[in-house]
Image (cartoon, rainbow, N blue to C red; front, side):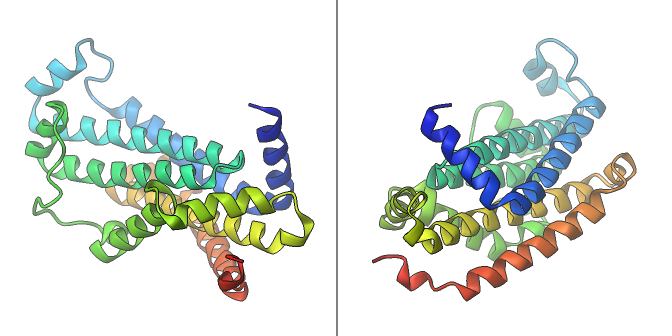
Length: 244
């Protein structure tokens, strides 16, 4: 970590302590869920995993590919957090989108063996596959999430340039504190929303996780409350004044 990254981390940790603490509680719980799924998954302790999965029973193949993608999603969520807390708010959204897409792919593989096989063969999944999506991945929700993350972080758009540029230019300037706060809160709102959807999906897809982590429902409820608080604060700010 560079000296500047260290200073940025120190500042946001102080300015947004409660928001980051809530994010970390949710992220720690997601990682625990992923670790539990890995311990429960068949074949993961065997050599030549891909070959074994290709030969496995469909239900085992679907379960293991789901677990692998859940862990992949948790890894990108942790990476996104690191970028967020060291000042790279636009790049953090790119990792956050990969997190969400990995969750979608995990659900597809869990429910469609042909798609699990496509994954193991190194091919992209067919997102037009007719499967029932849970409420956390409803088409309108997924579309809104992807558009927001793409515009401000994934693609080299004007919005992404403005987001990163304004953030860097306002962070240590007292007169621009409103811009700095708005941009960070907008990002962490996305982080909490996706983390909350991720956790809620996991306990629906794998109900035994509730027994393994009894506090998970309470953690999700706390995340909902914090997300709603941030939404109110963002609404009170005037985004139109940022691009001046």
